[in-house]
Image (cartoon, rainbow over all chains, first blue to last red; front, top):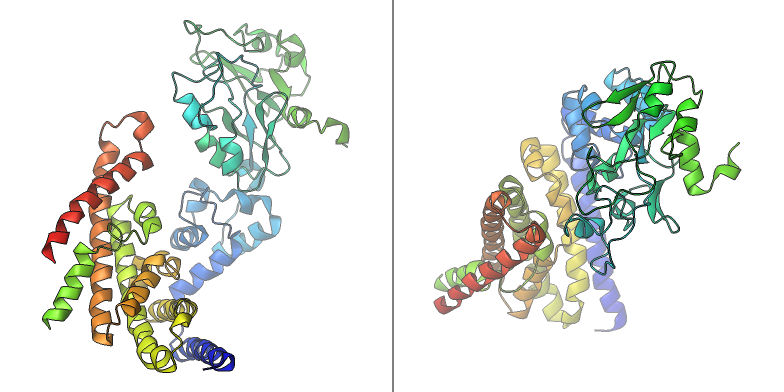
Length: 286
Length: 191
């Protein structure tokens, strides 16, 4: 049995398999109508199976969509919203009307990572592992640890860890707002904001009282309410329960007074600018 | 006949694919979180294992052995199993849509699952006839399903149990698997 014989056997069986698949494909009856619609829907989806919509893969999502189109509003595919062409074809296919600007969201990391380390942490390089250890290795238990769990889960590589600040930074141009990082972060630092949101609040210190034994970070929110008091347009709503400012974007005129008045500047920022500044991309901005 | 039954039982429990031969560990941990998924996966693996074992055994006994080219088995088996899965998936999709939905994503997922290939290679190594290969594949598939169902049942309960935080999820699953494997070693006394 020479080399040629072996090649013959392998090639022959390969050819046989190929022909068999072809024959089966041609001979069998066509798939039922219901499946056809699912396949059409799945062709309008991005197909990267990120699972951010809450379904196991794009095909399962397409199945759910074909059955009930209103699912799109409760569990949204963020990538489709980013691509006008995809969105249009899906709208046409499912007979939907989608206001993309309302549903389009971006992730924002609500921390500057300024809090000091309690000691030297030499465990597993993962935020989840570190934060489960006695409230985390940093002074502020709500702060960004910068080990990059969110960076790893991001399907579009929109998150980087800033080496200097040791904090996660989202690139708003790449972010699709899928929300995977929001679920991944053990300290719930990342939040999805509407992409037209022009002001964001960048502290995550969630307790009104100081935590015993832990120092607040130098740049943390003081709960001084100056931003709330200075706003002339009622665009800032003070959340009494959490002690944080919340924004009504429709009333905000971008006057910037709240930014000026904040004793720890940079806590409230124009979102697009702050995101780019953190990335060091400000100079490139048009 | 007794020979076939022995092969079936040995493959199902004593030489269990997952817990004694450590094949197919990826789906064993990946798909054993929910009982319903485990059943679908077990069904799909059993089906593919059965069909592929019969076909590879035919190829082994009537092509590879007569021409004395047994060393080609791995390449050929991968080729044959992959195309078989394609055909089976196509056939199920076109004829029985509810079965297709039940098997779901798992059917294409196991195209080159090592448990499927492993059973085919074991059959060849043991020089099984076609009938014996069928019994062995059926045993392997049912053993895989059995272990997957046991494991998913345990893991569903473990999710509710008060495990230490550092042990939650996979770590405790690994320990459970080790204990299960120890328990399955008891079946070795049967043969």
